[in-house]
Length: 465
Length: 37
Image (cartoon, rainbow over all chains, first blue to last red):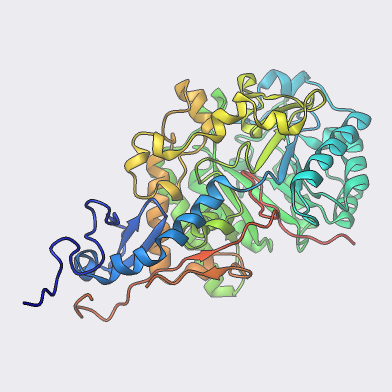
């Protein structure tokens, strides 16, 4: 008698969710017509018509098609999680800042009275970093070096000398509060093709100045917006908004504000709780989800109305995590995070940490750039503690369907809050909701509208079904 | 194969990217591209 269906293997090569068969979680994504079926280990997913989800799970096509591509999917994720080379540096040329933002991830006393790196030392540091990257990256690769802070333009002479000398090798960026970004400085950075990141937290001074103020308590909204408007149209411009309980309700309005000024790229980054000030300003997760998604909806509406995109970069990166994990541009929403493996941070005294979030946590300093080789620094326990933190070892992450679209960020704030790296993200509920919203956006056909133009360039499609 | 209960089709999108040493891979900064004059 012919046996149509194997009692061992079912209608395909394997039963799902038992033995060696593939495992699929079912995730409600808040869409009327679709639910997500997710193989969390490989970050593979299918949006199934809601009424047919069980048929897909129990039928033969999905597990069979998946198993045919499982090795490729697994290798793809493995590469981006474990096999990338360090190719970027956050470089803090001074500990000092002209502002006293309530949520800064750097200790307050250092920002008020800390040290600067002088020009000679900075050039020596860049030479050392270049030497490391020339030896480790493929020929022709240009690593990124972002002058960050504190306020890097307090060490402007040294920074500009570095950009001038090494501008043909590094791709430079400067993240600044814009207070010291005068016309001459703007002209220089534009001529060098340097990225310019501006920090701005609200669409009005009443909102923006709640968290970003001088040591004397004055807001800097007007100065920041003036610079922003002068940089309109510069392709290297982006804006970072740190989302706190003070500005979370303004996110949709902020999207209108940025779009009206011609911006194309912004980050709406939830504040990190690495320092006490940041912890005190963390938004309620429900409120964050509501207004963050409203901001994304507004960006989509504006695109529909005007044909002009304002990409919310941190969300766009999550979308890339779903559709092209290896093409992601930011490395907070994956585990291990990028700290210490894709990038690292150098402080004003030459101290080296996995990420600038860790510069204020000395136990995570691997050593000093001027005393040790970069290769040795990257292999220190301070670094490997971070680079070995994976969601598979965390509760509840290890059983979470969206663990590779979240990454349980950020190890620095997790350490600061829990005294251990072995804990989930403080904003776990928000990140899970964000993943669901990302699936819903895809089901709504908004993927291209919410991603950077040309996101598929150079990518190869893996067709599963 | 799933039964024909609706006209909606399943959606699955996945691309792979060969590592080439130029992956951006930062955290809280997004490098927008500009060219040196």
